[in-house]
Length: 322
Image 1: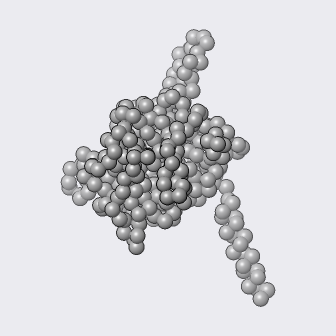
Image 2 (image 1 turned 30 degrees about the vertical axis):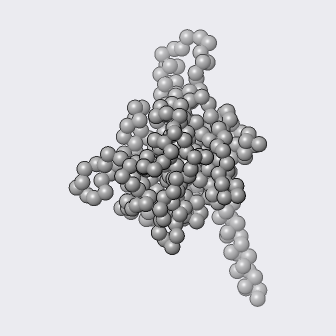
Image 3 (image 1 turned 45 degrees about the vertical axis):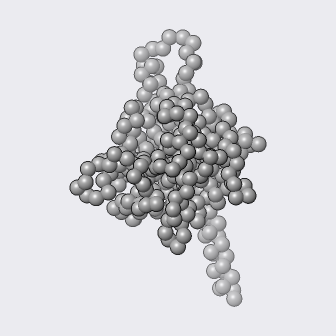
């Protein structure tokens, strides 16, 4: 009995240590305002967006692209020795346009979108489909194309999942309310069922993109634009109550800022809200002439108006929405 008690105590301590162990994204103190994440390493002055953390918080996938939004590429970084490693192109990315990474609950399966050909030797696709890849020790498996009803003849974007496997994603497929809508597909007995449109409460004649679904499906944060102009994009939230979605509410400032906010995600421990933004922290702040060195530094660092990854306490967002 004594040995059994010791063993049970050991399991409890191990599980508690794992749950409470520091994560790479943990801040040194409260983050009540959106703050550029890992400035100089992850957010650099390039177009850095769409963060996705593994369940232990120590592997990060994110997207870099050219300023004209071309050639999306997924990068990978690891939290080692108290800092994030220099990002490198993820082993499954680099040739085609790849974006929107998302770690599943198991911490190993990653979903992403790509215009890569479904079959080797075929031409590059003209639209984007959802793919998945598995982490295998220090490398990645060969990407697997998701079959219908997840993918369609049109583009699919930004897959995120509930803990029971239901997938939410954006799609331009027919049968929606507008150009791009949010859809979902339930996982039953290991098979994804017919994708359903989230309906007119969420979807409009404009565009709804990039849905982050809560792990328990209790809320949805997504990007909405009234037209095809992404510069008009803002983040909205809706709550799942009594089987219905509530009317979306626009996130207040400083979570939206008057420029483009997108790629919302909440960490699995519900501590932080991450998103991307094209806000320029220097806009309107020039009170005297710049030197050449000052200007070159400003336009080459994070916060220059391209896109950066921002982090804020999730509790700060919850408080602002009360």
